[in-house]
Length: 243
Image (cartoon, helix red, strand yellow):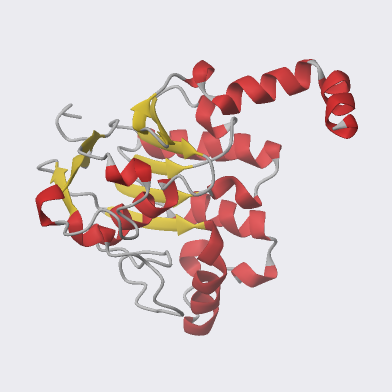
C-alpha cells in the first residue's frame, strides 16, 4: 500500500475565526477552547481525559463532520431518538487523504442500544453475524460489530468501546482492531481503558484543562494508576477504605 493512502483523516482544524463566542458550550470546554489543530496517526489515535474533558464531544463532532449519525452506526443509519449533539461539527475542517475509505462506522457506547433497536426493526442483521443484537449481552453485541460488521479499508470512530467489555474482551478487541488496521483501516477512539491504550501503533492525546497534548502510554494516568494499584492493591485498599 502507498504510504500516502492513510490516514484517511490526516488532520482536523478548528475554524476559530467562525466561532462567535468561546464562552458558550461546547467551545467553553478548555480542551476545545485551546484547540487549533490535531494530526492523526495512520492507524489508531486515542483521546483520553477525565469525564467532562471534551474527548467524547470532539469524537462526536468528528464523526458527524464525516457524515455519520451522531447516535452511531454507518453513514446509512438515518434514525434519531434525540437531538443532543453540539454544533462543534460545523466548525471543524477536515484535512483528508486523496483516498476515501470504503467502509465506516461510528460506535458509541451510550447510544448503541438505539442502533441495535434499529437493526432489529429493519431486520438488517446479516452484517452483525445474523443474530439480534438485543439477544446478546452488551459486550457480545459490541464484539459482533467489531468482528462482523467492520470489513476493513475503513474509517472507524469509537466512543468508549470498552464500556461493555471485560478485560479479556478488551484484549480480544485489540486483536480485532489490529486485524482491521492490517486491512488498511484507521481508528479514532475515545477511551478510559489502559488495555486498549497499550496498542503500539497509535498516537495518544490527553485532554485536560490546559488543552490537548500528546502523551506516551507509560506517562498516562491510566497506565500509572492501574500499575500502582495492581502492584500495591492491599495498601491502596487500606488507604481508600480508611479515607
